[in-house]
Image 1 (cartoon, rainbow, N blue to C red):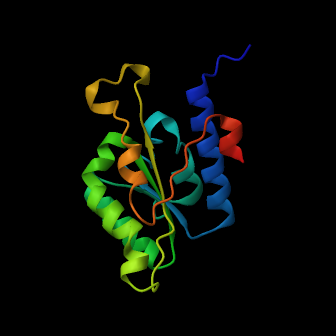
Image 2 (cartoon, rainbow, N blue to C red):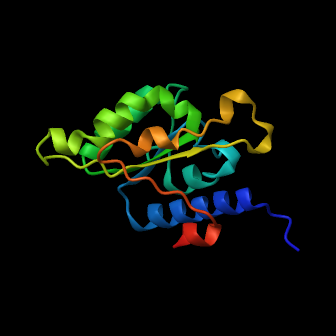
Length: 160
């Protein structure tokens, strides 16, 4: 019997997929709090900074609105950023950047820009994370034109 929990399976799958994308496409980069040498929340980016360098795995300050704006600019210049939002409730701080920039910039620019970005945030009531870390705000993002949401039910579905 495995002692790896389903949450750990999802996180390990995310790490494997991010490593695979980073290895195949030099435009893929990861932004977020503690994603570099600390390995990120739940260690989902462990080893990425060592493998791909600090310019592709960028530790950011605790300023979700600022680093999400950086990600939009990076995506506009043909990079493929991945945002590690730590917890989905924290992404409310970047709601304007996600909705007005990530979601609608393609439309408001007349198709001149695409924003190919993955934004990841852990949500829910697991692991006794307290009131500040247990939000389920996916429905906020579902209503934004240009945003495509994906939520996997199993690590196998996550792998594709």
